[in-house]
Image 1 (tube, rainbow, N blue to C red):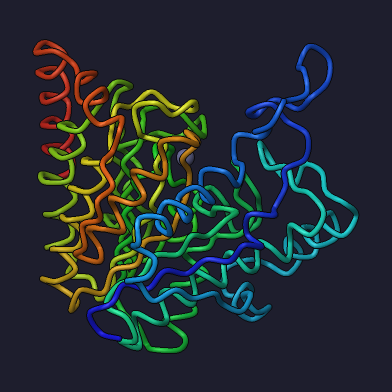
Image 2: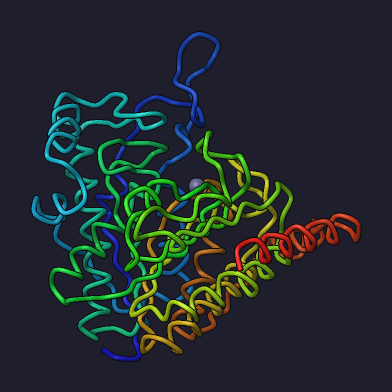
Length: 369
Ligand code: ZN
């Protein structure tokens, strides 16, 4: 249905388990077993988003879908066979550490294939014009996953797998990926850094995760030179710094590149109460950033925009940020009001910090121009 927003999800994605952790700490020694939430990347923030969509009435106005798991052929466009085999073997054996900060449980391989399959279906439905834009509530997430290495709660590169499937099926050309998860989109960068047909842009908290990358200097390699943009922002950056970066760096880059599809690695861990980062965004920030990418998609590619869910660990707050994104995508405003908005707007830094952040983004924009 043209004019409709697709929403791709599956309850099974909420059943992926990382085993026994408190936040990111394996239980044992001095780390007490958790009472409830457990590992930071838990289903609750995602399930509560879907529940808020249901009780607000938004779900009933979207095209709700599940999807088939990604096929072996889909995965092999991005991941080597040996890595997939290693992942499946550990998953079949009941789980364990697949990579750095990447614990899995029993059946995680099949659930990760479903998570990637949801992203594939979301992109495919937009490419076929079945829906105007789409959101994939993919879990486990994907943006830290390298072609041959799991990392940071990510086991399959959901977005590259979906893009490569669309390139194979629809002859899709230029694609822009905007990653506003608070952590660096290192996996997506590494998969596309030698390509000029996929522009990758990552806004993130400077030196947060993963460690050991050189930030703004990483602009792509070989044919991909100039097609990778990193926007590292200092801890404490909030609404104004992000919107300034979107307006002065991201939007001009999109206008130069003229993508045929825009995909957003839509993490919410830059919100002001996230336990894994120190940024200060709120639901109106995510709403405003969504409006900007939606307008860019309308200028360049008939509105073709796909959001793929990534991080976000504040269980009570992620749903309000996600609802704002979905409302903006669908052009629908529910009666839901963000109960944290006033508090988080109050937390915005005072004048001296604002000026520092404004100068920081201006210098980045100059260096990246
Ligand atoms: Zn993240």
